Length: 608
Image (cartoon, rainbow, N blue to C red):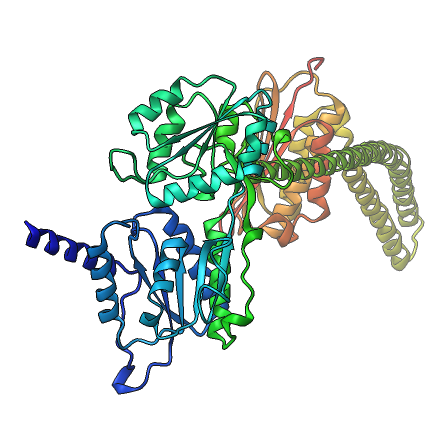
């Protein structure tokens, strides 16, 4: 049994020694070159799973990495020095470390917390007078000029009184303070420290120290507390029955069952059920120690670096526990840190809300600009349409005036000038007859004959011009006869076959409609003769109950687009304007080699 115990303890010591963050490497570098990398050894008092170790380690390593960019090899040992009575374990641990680091010269050794500090103090020769930078050693223990040679470090204190004061400010009716601790040496040391610090509080409220009670018994006791009580947790590593446990694990049960608010003294406990207090920060102390290590690695003597660390204590509170106990932030001491605050809706979605609001505002501005622009454009379009309407109205009036003037001029030519020319031709004929009877010379007779013929030709030309200006037949006989007459005249004068097909038409066609159709037909016929090279043109005029249809089709060469070809020119614009005045529709179909079709539909007015 004794041998088994020894073997078990050896295994435990070996496990505690090799649980390091960075493994030890040979001192020589690649290809036998000397390794000049600085080496730092961290000695943690607690076992590797202790939560407070993670806080210390995080602070130390962050400070070294930030302050010593050349890189240092940081190694760690978790000594588990809470076994004060296990002398064999301590001897085996010391022997293992002595063997493991026999040939290693560290540039800095960092004992973390009281047990590791005492271990290094008792075994200073183990580290060959390496510089010591201790971390988290209580004030009074760590005097670098008395306790250790070639040492400096970070000290701390626990603010028992300030924590109780802040608790009483939040709970002014509190009359009882229950202080919880365990039975380990560290637990007992913290209790003695608390008794010494809180001696003055006994005058103001009842103090009760509960030491090492089994967790089940302790939870039952806490569940019976009234609203006038406050609980202060020191540490709870071991109970009276010898069961070891971590304070943070016990604290979760304590906070769950306690009917009184629970306070603590160091920030590792925050987040596990305590409301808060003026706390020592393990991570901040570790960061200070790491900064001191950097100064030592750069060649500064530890004795030239003054110990510090008391400034790391700060008021810290858990926002979740504040909600549980209905504590307002106004009740907190000045410069308090509030942790574990659940983000508000603004914290969670503020960026998105700002983005959405910005997008909405931007879209509103864009939409407003578009609406303003659209309004301006609509006003411009309305103005343009009004101007176009006035221009079209003016064009219509000009066409009507033109037709009226043509009608008047054609009538003047037909009724006056043509008649007078005819009379002159008759008179010339009489002179020719008289000259023949009076035996005039042949030359005179010939001249008279030519004069008579010229007068006849001029009369015919004037009559033709009169018809072109305005066909009187349109007024006298109607649209169908006027178109037949125009087609006959065109066929005879241009030697081209023109077919006319006229269906049944309304008895009365408004003159403006008749003139429109006649002019479009006239323009289309003459364009066919001039440009299409067609040997045949077909004109079709028909009507139904609502519309008069006109179509002029030729079998000529056709052409491309109307605007680019130029064969209609101003005539096309005139046709479009005329058809607009009667609310009709004009369509021209053409293609190279396929002839041209001009189709017109004009509505019949209801009064027709």
